[in-house]
Length: 255
Image (cartoon, rainbow, N blue to C red; front, side, top):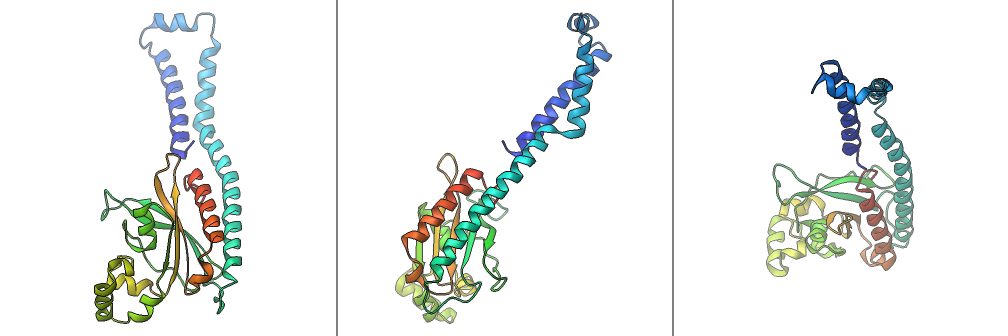
């Protein structure tokens, strides 16, 4: 059950009980109908009154949902932190070592906006790293753009080593030359401005998040400044896939 469903249930019960009390007070649809309904059962009005009071004051379905969400939130946070800890263990094998806070795990969700009303875009909803630096840079890619956009387009895991492109592309002229030689996929279909914005992250990995109908709804990504060959391991993708499965089943409610 989602929060919206819980609110609708609360308001529906409250509305029906209120309509019952009002209908009896104003004899709608008729006094005879209410006499037949209440005949020998005068406690029904008291029941309706109690329902109005309880659902108006306490919203039981919504309250139950929020308690349930809190329990699920604790569980999914433990799962995320456990996965992040395992990713850090894998990252410890990178040589030369990564700086503290370099390795990052991100959760992305497919959303719609004014600029992408139909196809949508990917929005970063959570980031996990061991430091506040380097801070995330604004990035909300469309389908096929960036590693997460390519993950969306192909609906499968993506691994990308951007070290060569990042080393050779230092200006817009370098970018144009590199794309002409290697193709747009070599720069993840990013524009020059976008590539220059994110080229400090060269070891890039992403796996899909799917809903109960096996539809793409987002992805989990891991990135670092270097160390692609050390991070490109089955264990990393297994951890990311398991986390994506858990988030997908939870419908991003606690990510």
